[in-house]
Length: 341
Image (cartoon, rainbow, N blue to C red; front, side, top):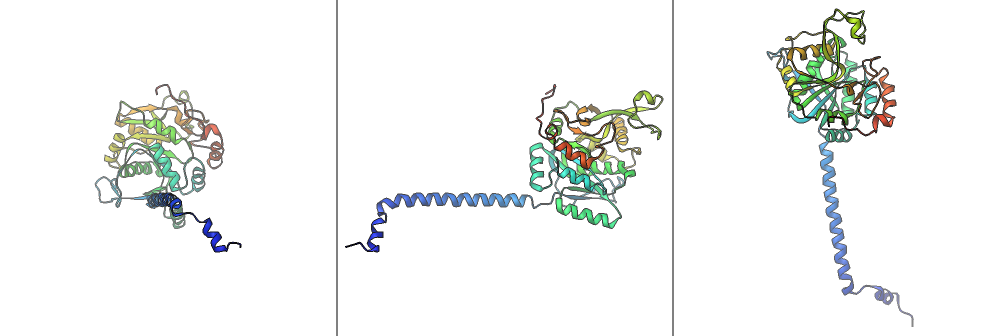
C-alpha cells in the first residue's frame, strides 16, 4: 500500500540529533551577519554624518579692531591643524574655470575632496570675495550650496584690489587653520596635489619661507614693458626677486607676521605678486625657488602647469584643463624622486 504524503515527508525530515549542529551553525552565521550589518550601517551613518558638516566658511572682518579690519570673526569654527591650506583664488566670472577644475584635479563631491585632503594633508577651497551685484551673489550662493567648497571673504571682489584680497585670504586662512604652509593658487593652473604635498612636507632649516617659482621684475611697472621681457631689456629699473603669481606658498611664521600687520603698514602695488614679493623682501624671509611650480608642459616632476610665458595661467583654461587631465603624463604619471630626497 503506497505511503501517504504525511509519512513520506516524515521520512525526509532530519532527525533531531543531526539537525542540532546545523541549526547552531546557522545561528552563528546569522548572528555574524547581523553584527556585520550593524557595524557597516553604523560606519555608513558615521561616514554620512561626517560629511553633513558644511565645508564652506564665510569670514567677516571685525571693523572695530585696531588693525584696520585685520582680525577675523568666525562663528563657532575651530582652528584645524593641517600641513597646508590651498586657497584657489577665483572670481564671479570664473564659473567655467571652477567647473573645469571640478572635472579634473579638484574633486566636486564631499567624499572625493575629503579623500584628497586626507591623502595629501592639504585643504583645498575656492576663495572669493563679495559684490554688490545681487544676481551674481545669488548665483554664488547656489554654487556654494551645491558644491560646498568655498572660503568666502568679506572683501570686494575686484581685479584692481587683488592685493587686498590676497592679504585678506592669508589672514582668514590663518584664523581658520593651523597650517605649516598657506598656498595661494589661481583657478587657471593645472595642479598635482600629491606633488605639492611632497614639496611642502620637506624639512627646511628656515621657519620663514617664501616658496615659489621665482622671477625678477620691476618695482615700478612701466606699461610699455611686457611682464615677460628679459632682464637685459629692462636695465636701469629697480629689481627684486619674487614668485610668479599663479602659485606660491608662505610658511606659518611668515603668515603670522602678515596677520599682525595693519592693512596700511606696507605699500600696495597694482600687481598682487609684486606686492607680496616686496613685503617678503622687507621681512627678510628665505626665498625658495622651485621651477616645478611653473612648467609649461606636464612631466614626472611638474607640480603646477600653465602657459608660461604666454599667459599668467593657462591661456584657455576651461578647454586646456580638460585636455591636460586627459593625458596620462599629467594626471596619472608617477612621481620620480628628486635629487634631494
